[in-house]
Image 1 (cartoon, one colour):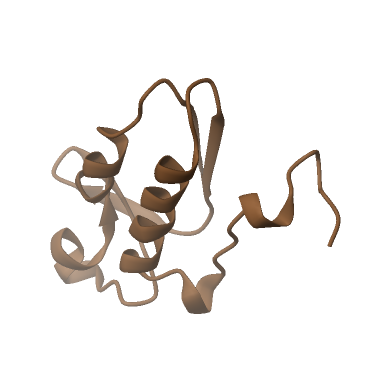
Image 2 (image 1 turned 120 degrees about the horizontal axis):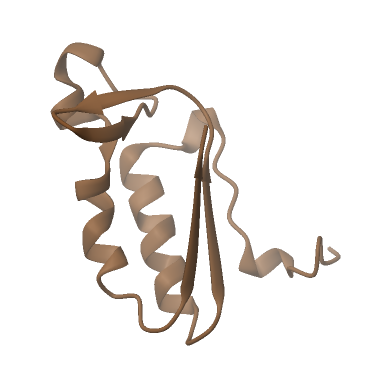
Length: 96
């Protein structure tokens, strides 16, 4: 495997629809934070469908149910523990 855009394959994680569960996304973000250091860039790109829970955005994962999205969708609250562990890394979040 070769580097793509200067990123080695072992430094990237791609989750597609089938494997992008809420838990898998949270674990991937936690792993990215743990594997990076000061001044490293973490790019988190989420593409798919979403909505809101109260005033916070949520992102639908394979197990999400609209009616129960507060419990089943990926929310910023789910990612906050990992983001609080950032220690000088740069974070770019793209959502579409």
